[in-house]
Image (cartoon, rainbow, N blue to C red):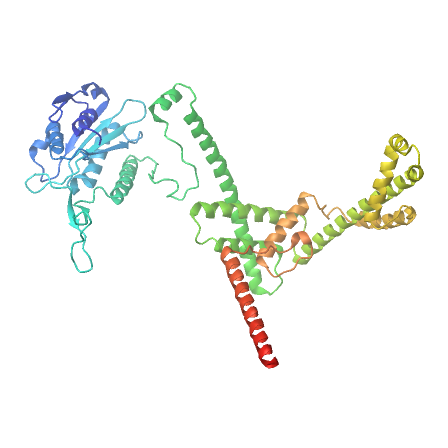
Length: 508
């Protein structure tokens, strides 16, 4: 509550109340049309006079002497539109009696409804309990801290160390959690009472482990503009969140279906494994990969677990579809396919290289005479160079390229063409099922190889691109290895030193 409990009560009830502290009337009677209902609920030991709103809140204020005292607790609770309006006072009354009045609080609630689809309740609560005579009790007491000998601990200032002890649990976070939970329960009770198929949960998406982004509160200004058809930044932000959540839910539904199919496949494979001992198929290895990844995330947070599980499911389902479409079942078939793809790529590179060599040999032979003429000139050499720069540069570049391949400019073109013909025949022999190295199919094979390597870590795949993925060394591992190296070096130095001393003594 802010500056005045009396002002808060006047606003909530839509009344004009006189404040003893400020010695003036708090004018809020103009709010009366939107106030559907107001009521004061008191515990058994509260004096009868507290049924008067002005008396109750002036009394609650009068016992607070500190300038920064909290005067009252104000709760604003949204009310369900689906519940008949005549039942709303009963709903709020039942909630307040159970959660507040039974525990000793005085409760003043009012129900507001402007007709804009946002009915809500203002619940004002006292912060002090009452004794059996109806007098206000302290909120807390001071308790001194004691040392191990049971003595008070004196501070340098001369004061004794102490701490505050609340005399009620009304300000505890756990109480607020309970009130939120019970508010949801009583609304669900009235939904059921009216045969309305709605259930609400006031916990956040994160606490309910729901992978959705929450929308932001628009506020009265933005909300008013949106109702008039004017788009606002906050409204656009909420619409983007809604679209994101829809897309994510669609994806999650798809992942759920994929997960179900994979689960069925896994069950069938497990049953087959128990009946016969065979080398695991690639599909079995992919299923095992999901289990390995899942077990490695036992201490992760919910969102991290879910996001990475979705990523793994997409990866594995994509791999299974790819393997089935290409009729790749055994690990041996898979290795042969990668080897064939690598061999095809190696042959392609050799063919390209051979063609480049032939091209440079032809360039060298076409320009050799011009180059030698230029080299043999004594006079007008620069002019000749300038006039024939293209031919001379072509010869020089060709010679450099051939030298890298340990060839001279007179090497036989026919022998290279013969080799290329053999390589081309071998290249053409590869069927369309062997993927090109830069194709999406080959990239998928490499992704699958990483999964296989994770499951069968000690397995050596021949293709360089499909080597088992090595685990990254941790910082602690590096530190331990460094310390071991230092220790080993010290021991070696010590041994050398002792050997040197021993040799000197023997010489003496």
